[in-house]
Length: 231
Image 1: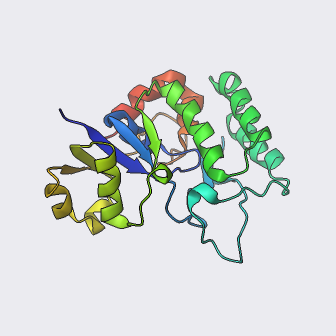
Image 2: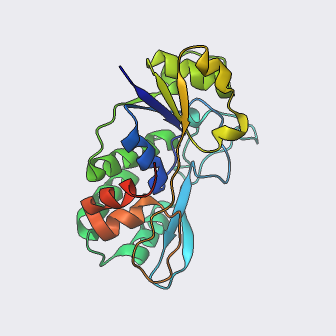
C-alpha cells in the first residue's frame, strides 16, 4: 500500500505551497524539532494592501541567552511587547471589506488575542483554520514527538519510517542536500514537490503571499486555486 509522507516546518500564516503539499500527502509531519531561524517565515509572512504594497505581519519572539538556539517548538512569543494591535490592524488595513473578511477575521482575532506562549502553538492554531477552510483532512503529527538525534536526510528518513511511508514527498530544496540512497535502501521512493504560486486576478499581483490573502478573497474556492498550482 502506497503512503506518501511529507515534512515541513511550522511556518506562520504559510503560503499556498505549504497547503498544496498537505493536499498531496497521506501524512504530514510538522518539523518543529529543528532550530528556529530568525528573520525567516517562522514568525512572519507577507500580505498585500489595496495599493499593492507588500509588507510583513510579524509576531515578536524572545531571544534566549542572546542567540536563537532553541528548536521551533520551544521559541517563546514576547507577550510583553504590544504587537497585537499593529498585527491585527495590518490585516484589517489589507483585507477589511473583502468577500470573506467578516467570516475569517473574528477567528484570527480570537487566536491572536488569546495568544499561546510559543510561536509553534500559535502557528498551528492558524494552520488548522486554513486546513478547515481548504477542506484538508490529511493527518498531522509532530517531529518533536519522535526522539531522534539525527539531522538532514537521516532525520527525514527516520520520520518517514516512523510514519510507515513508502514515498517521501520532499520540498524542491531537497534536491540540493537529500541523500536519496538511504531512502532507496529502505525501499522508499523520493519525489519532489513542484509548486508555482497561483496567479489570480488582482491589481498589483505579487507571488508567494500568505494563504491569508487567498482565503480572504476566495474562501473555500481557494482550495481549487491551490490544487492547480503544482504537482
